Length: 281
Ligand SMILES: Nc1nc(=O)c2c([nH]1)NC[C@@H]1CN(c3ccc(C(=O)N[C@@H](CCC(=O)O)C(=O)O)cc3)C=[N+]21
Image (cartoon, rainbow, N blue to C red; front, side, top):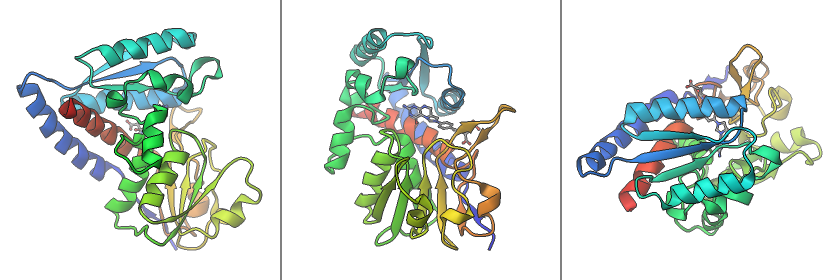
């Protein structure tokens, strides 16, 4: 078996094109959409995302303000800035990049992002509403997992999905979105005993841990679909996923590549959320 690559570029381009049309309409009516990205880290993975957002925003007619507070910013300063952006009428979306300084968790600070501007679903209110089946912006990365599976016509209802990773930005919200699609969802994490036994029962494995090459042929049943959410920087300045693509090639049925898989879709969905937030205002 040769795993089919599930590319995200085509889907991302379609989302950006639709988003650009809506952004142009907003701009004509004097409300050009604006996204503020708050950065308080020198993490390479975050830098990839910020570059990706800035580039895609430029292609889509969305203004993107990068608010870099530096890796030594304290929690009070970050919260104050989030409140300021939440109160700024010219800003429609606010994203706080992880990781955060001093080991702060995203959910500790993200309550300071106004719910209506929470385009990456970081405010605990957004995650709670998502879990309760109420309208909220899901984290773009979690939504991208489902969007890329839909794009390739991969059925979710009634199928077994193993989500590896339980972060607030990806694992938990992805589990809720997959449940909403009637998948049978198992969430695995660092304390899961015998990970491979659990993931081998799944039709779809979502890898969202942040450990390069963690998921190998030993972790999946023949023909399984692997969605690789990992964005791990490599020493040569590139990006690699949580899946061992070479190992999986002869066993998985399909695999999202890194780069070129979930990443571009994530960025496009974040911009779609920003335009939706600007429209709703
Ligand atoms: N609050 C928060 N939410 C996040 O979603 C979040 C975060 N913090 N911190 C950092 C990580 C990292 N991350 C990436 C998303 C897309 C690409 C991406 O678009 N990658 C392209 C490569 C870059 C390009 O080609 O332009 C690709 O995979 O093809 C990379 C990294 C989101 N993260």
